[in-house]
Image (cartoon, rainbow, N blue to C red; front, side):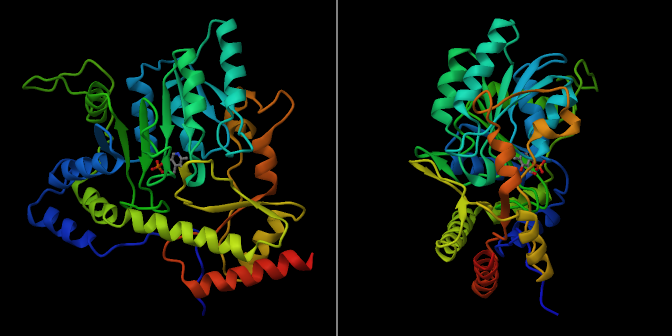
Length: 376
Ligand SMILES: Cc1ncc(COP(=O)(O)O)c(C=O)c1O
């Protein structure tokens, strides 16, 4: 039977076993050890940022980022609406109130003009957010310069959710490093993986220190167990950090391959009625997933056709302001009567994009896509 073609599956480099063996041989199997520290340094070097903190997931890193920025129950937090639910859930863990900001058609990421309106409105009611979570979706950077300028005018810090965009860059700076705090994810479907894990990156040493304290059960510095603050068990294990070290070695190759896959789709579908996610000027996306919208075809019918051939594809993220979980949240559209993220969701699709996709597999997918799109 032909192997199923997956959207984005783990792709090992061959270097991982060395670090895992070191962890086993030295009996550093826990959430502390040489791989964790080395990985944090290697990642901070890669990102060209002051410090990194390895966490058990990207979600945990977002939770820690909100906590160190002082978000408390009842506070307001703004978040991109067009994203995976994990971007916003940590605000709910804290009991904060979410406001969702629509996408800009130019990037599919947070709309600067919607953010401006949302902040102006929050200022009027005296309820400015404590933090803004900006997501770099599918590996493409949001317009961080425009968003930062607006956020700075209101003195609100940004958390850059670069879970999907490790290895991408914006105006020459690595994705995740353009805000007060950034986060990455090493979940199984991401560009590199630890099997599960995440990371917080920041240039502020006190934020890393505070995040580390909260991630390790907030144990006070005494020679017995003493706790004054609610803490969490959010560190990455030394074994998982070993996998990450092996993966980090090939990150740039993985990004290059994903970009090549994107370019192949773009070339093959050039004469069809589709529009790919744009890449902003002076940015280098990781093209974690190749995503596109269909001008007049039904994406669910296309996904069903691909599934019949054993090919996994997915709908784009359903915007969070449409989710029953967030039914009480306020939403600011790109313009007062334009909901860009919903339009993207209703017409979009993610195509298989893993760096281990073979040339033959992609030729097969391209053939099916062009036949189907031209026939209708
Ligand atoms: C945009 C976004 N934010 C946050 C996360 C959470 O990362 P993790 O799965 O490592 O908790 C993910 C991925 O899963 C994501 O795609």
